[in-house]
Amino acid sequence: MHDIEKIFEEMRDAIPKGPVQIKELKEKGVPVIGTYCTFTPWELVNAMGGVSVSLCSTSDKPIEAAEKHLPRNLCPLIKSSYGFALTDTCPYFHFCDLIIGETTCDGKKKMYEYLNELRPVHVMQLPQTPDGRMSKALWKDEILRFKEKLESTFGTVITDEALAGSIELRNRMNRVLMEFYDLAKLPTPAVTGREIMVVSDYIKFSFEYEEAIAKVKELTQKLRENYEAGERRVPGKPKRILITGCPTGKSLQKVADAVEAPENGGVVAGFENCGNLKCSDLPVRTDITPIDALTEKYLRIPCSVMSPNKDRLQLLRRFCEEYRIDGVVDVILQACHTYNVESRSIRLEMQKLGTPYISIETDYSQGDAAQLATRMGAFIEML
Image (cartoon, rainbow, N blue to C red; front, side):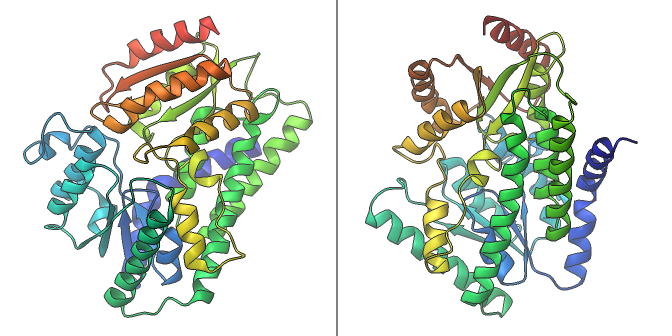
C-alpha cells in the first residue's frame, strides 16, 4: 500500500480508539478534563499530569433528548453537547473528572449550570474584548484561578518548570500541524479538505502526544517529497476555498464534501475555525513567564465573541493571501448569533480584498447536503 494512504488509514483507524485510550488513562489514575472551547489553556491540564479532551459535539442524534431541557431554537452545538452528556452516550464525558466551561456565549453559560448537575464544572469568565489592561488582568486572574482549581481538586502543584515543558510540547504540536496545513499553500494543494479534517481530528483525539507528532511529521514529509517528485493528489486546477465561521466537525463535513464534489471542481485549502488554522497559528511565547504567556496567547484567539474582533479580519486577509484562496465560505450554525452578526464584517472585508464570499447557515442534519452541493457548485463556477 502507498505509504501516504497507509498513514491516513492509520489515522482514521486511531480516531475511534480515543475513548479506549481515555478509559485506560482513567484506570491508571490520570485526571481527565473535559473542555468545550479552545480558550481553555491545554498546557495547564498537561502540566499537572492530566489529559484534556474536547467535548464539543457535532451530531444531531442526542438533540431530541437535549430539547427536553433546552430551547429548540438554540445552537445545535450546545444542544448536541448537552444531549450527549444528559444521555451519558459520550464516552469522553463519561470518564471526565472535571468539566471546564467558558463564558463565550449566553447559551453555553446557561448549559454549564445544567452540566454541573452531572459533573463538577468550573467556568472561566472570559473578557468581552481582547484589548486593554483590564481584559488582560481579568483573563490572567481566570487562568490563575483555573490553575488553583486543578491543584486543589487533584492535590498537586503546577510548577513553572512543568508549565514551560507543556508549553514547549503544545507549541510543537501546533507547529507540526501548521507544517501540514501549509501543504495547501503549494501551487496545487497537496491535501484535500477531508484529509485536513482527518489530521486535525487525529491529533485532537490522540493522547500519546509524541507518537501523534511523529506521525503527522512523517505524513507531511512524505506528502512534500512526493509532490516535489511530481505527484499531484488533487487533480487539475481546482478553485481553492477557505472555510471560516463556526466550529466544524463530522456532521459539517457535508460542507467540505460539497466544495470538493468532483463536479464542482473545488478544494478546501484551509479551515479558519476553532481548532484549526486559527488556534495553531499563534505559538505561546517562551521569553516571558508561563502564566503571562498563556494569558497573551489565549486572549488573542480571534473568536466572534470578542468585540471588536479585528484580529479575525487580519487573520483572514493573511490566510487568503498565503493559501492563494479563490473564495471564502462562511459556515454559520443556526442560532449562533455572534458569527451570524459578524458575517457582514467578513463579507465587507473580503470585498476589499477582492475575494468572493458566501455565507451558509446550517445545522447538523444532513437534509440540506444536496442543496449545499448545488450552492457550492454555483459559487465555484462563478470564481
